Image 1: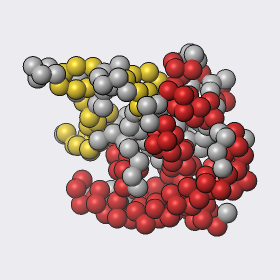
Image 2: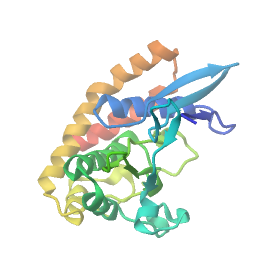
Image 3: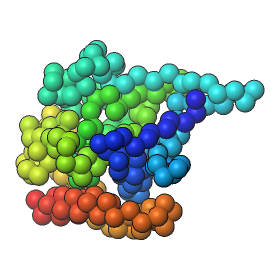
Image 4: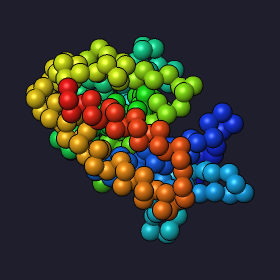
Length: 243
């Protein structure tokens, strides 16, 4: 198949809209993320996602590109996708990408911004199986576009603790510049570089969250539940720029 469909769930009616909006927000600040749109069929919403691991061959047939998620690449079982359950740390994922990417300078920066985005945009479910390596026909290995981006903090029943800790802290509301410093040292990068990246990302999100919400509602209709995400993002970004 060339697309993935994600439908509403009985306990998570807003999930397709939340994932679509959160992904559009990521794309608005330059993060490489999947193409996703919201659709409605017989009053039920669903997200339509373009698969990045599919290409057309010269005959016009769909071919699958090989990919490997970070649990597989690091030798962890699928049940250990969370750091807290014995899975890999963010620093392990960072080093894997450094060692395997055909363009590590670009891909590792995208990875750092992904983790920053998860903290600021309330995505507590950014785990190791949501990161993958894509093996391209030209022989290159690259970080895949980001997927499964959802502001889970807007859903009360989902644990708000982060899948990857930041300098030992999993509560996004408690993370400070000191925690980012620790993460930078774990990844062998300059702490000032990472703190600047956090501040830049926070400022970009503050500039883009309202326009992205307005664009979303222009295309897909009014969606009052998105106000929860807007408040979470704004609060987290304001904390980050004051830290």
